[in-house]
Length: 268
Image (cartoon, rainbow, N blue to C red):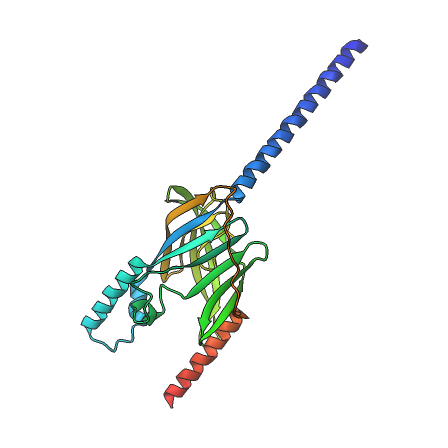
């Protein structure tokens, strides 16, 4: 009887030991798999499509109908040729416009409207949770810091982009108009959970997957090409330097004050 009891106890201990080994191996496998997915680096090429109804509302209406039509045709051609690139590694990303011969001129339609193009670059660091937009403002180089977007609302709606199953997310973007009134716009993003990197175009990040499409009501940024690099290949992503540090809110206040002063002078 004692031998039988000891035999059963030994079998129970053996089974318990095997379960521990199994869970240990499973845990290591999950950790390794997670490490691979999170260490993906690569680059995405995006195209930006703008809302032409919004563009028409921005025109000064001082030209003829023929001039307006010619301008919109020129703008449409420039937008087709405008591309942006997002380069990302494990903890950093960099986003900027790819130079093109047709729309880098100051006489371009994009420059006239200040639409669909920006001079500068966006940098995001996952550890510091800060986005830096390096841009020109009144002839000065600014390093505009904005906080991490964390109030995304996730949905189960799906869409296929570049062969990846993407999920939908919404973000309510808070801002203030020229009269300092609080306003809100809706940002719609489609991200790929399979690409476990929380990066995206411009200042939009922190989703559980790479953003392959982004819409803000006035324009839509869509991924056209994606290139992933080997795990061991390191990308050199540099943090922007050489400018005056300022927060997004402070820059908006400065721009608002200047515009109000300009409108005030125009009335006199």
